Length: 138
Image 1: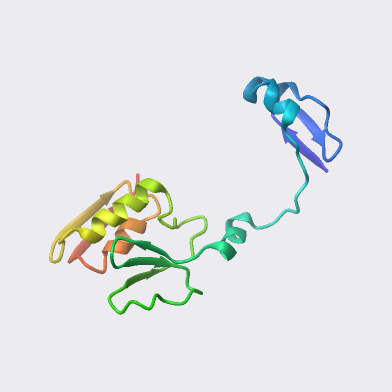
Image 2: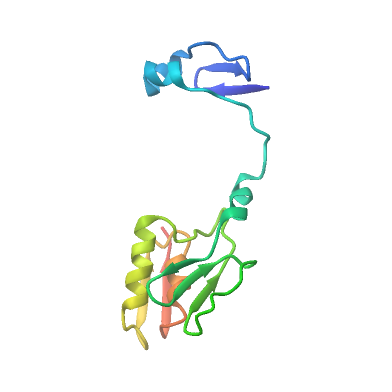
């Protein structure tokens, strides 16, 4: 199997002891200690979902994969989605913090704008509680 490594094509698993491109980018210590192995090609944007579990943000907001059981909490607000190439999960620290803050704000009967919405997870999550939600990607 041939893989592309910046400037050189390498054969896995018979790698050269040092790759000059990797030395330049990551330093010689990395190249001397790194170990590479071939892995079977898969649909990586879907494979990680098998380990994704429901996540709670704040007191009531849950983001859950569609195949997961709903939380037992009767007051839970559940957002069901299956992320992939378009939708995020809320697991990024900044997004998680925004979800917690949005969950805590009294925004009923308000208009909320998510500017630079990326995947739209903030708008999707908050749309249950506001009168109007506008998400703008740029």
